Amino acid sequence: MAHDTDNPRPEDIEAAKAKDAGRGGAGADEPAKEWDIADADLSDFSAEVLKTDETIARLEKELAEERIRAMRLMADFQNFQRRATSNERVARAQGISAVVTSVVPVIDHFDLALAQDPGKASVQQIVDGVKVIREELLRVLTRHGVQVVSPVQNDVFVPGKHEAIMQMPAEGVASGHVAQTFQPGFVLREGEQEFVLRPAKVAVAP
Image 1 (cartoon, rainbow, N blue to C red):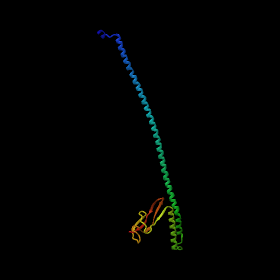
Image 2: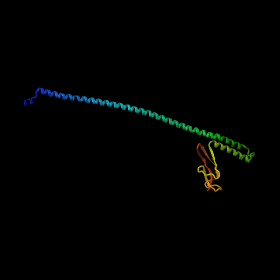
Image 3: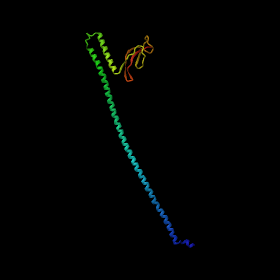
Image 4: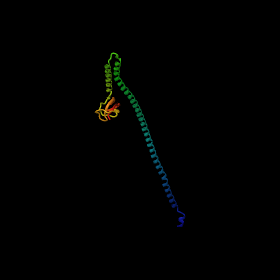
């Protein structure tokens, strides 16, 4: 039996070789399997790169479109500003033109009054002429929304619309009410709004 152990039989040697060859074959399959995994990973990476490139291209396109849109909005806004400024100038010119056109007849009345011969015109005629001119001027102001503020005695004092320049007792006038008007004021009405152009100067009862 010792002889058999020290000197293996030829068939045992062949069996050992076959066993080693079997192990080597199994080991040879592993590198091939690793190459398959590597190929799969490379394919996934390529797909991700392609997806990223598509995303970048889409974002760049959207950015370019937004830039164009922003430029158009800026151009529209600048055009709006120019039109608004131009319209404001035109409206101002039209407003001034309307006022001047209305006042021109009043100036004509002044010219007629000044053309009269002082030696032939009586004082009453001159006063009547001035009254006519004044009434014509007030009508012009009324057509443009301007109203005269001329409070009468015992009217309620309205701050802003009235300006108290002094206190003055007056019979039958309650305290804090208008005792006398020294100078009329003027207000401009635009729809429901009212703008004081000049307050009326008044005396107020103490």
